[in-house]
Image 1 (cartoon, rainbow, N blue to C red):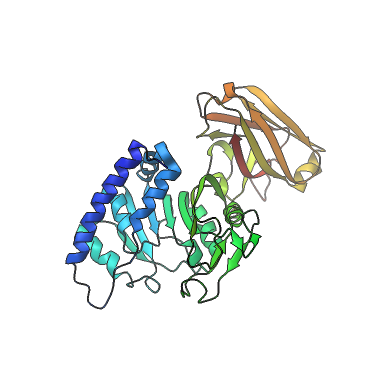
Image 2 (cartoon, one colour):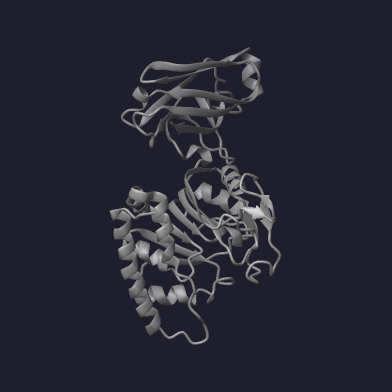
Length: 375
């Protein structure tokens, strides 16, 4: 793919930074240990292809809060982010790190970096050092984790966005894996004789994993040989993803009528509640899906519950429910309603549970996801 001017500029800055780091590494004494052998900044080329002319917006996003480089190696990527004005943290696990994290600490000292560096085991049940990160880079880490589901779910609870890359497989012998939501568990010496490799997902398996762990895929690309098997040492197929957390409706701006997260990623509403979709393409049709749960207690007091959705006072959709349990409500926003981009959706229920001695909240329904697709 041909680089846009923005991509070319950032890659040029990365090239200059790489030359600076290479010179520093050559000057830093390191008896008894070796530097991380791979070029961490080479990932920028693939990310540039993933984002194209929107590449700069990724770094604008990184400047809006704290950015985390997960599995940082010698920290070159994290230090480059810092050079772009991003408040960055670097995290790796000294037991599995190439040089037990001596490299990242030595390089940080030589650069005069202010980055916080943490030694952290992602294969244990963990909570990240900060409560919240605006953006996490998880590059080449996933297939080294014993429990990728826990790690990705925890990341969705503590961060808004994630850039992820991982090795995937397209075939198992003559069997195509691309459309099968599967994962292959490597033996301890099956791939590059490296016992830190565990799970290789198919593309469909990776997408399913991300969905189950509360991530919405905003961009997805694969790079490499499409005939790659899970343990093929001669071929390599990588997925590059830009993700947004959906945990506890984090992909939306909650305007009014919402109760606190219950610890499982879903929320009670009041009888009337509103959300604002912050990143909706203007002038395009959008299909909005609301996934909800109607509790038994609600229908014990009202034989049916009607939910309506309005934009700027105009009702777009209404649906009546007479059975408890999970439901899916779908409606469309027309191009005129999506202009100029951000849209507020106002929901209203025909009935809600009133405050009670055991629970002083007005409770309507439970909402566990609101998503949209544009066309």
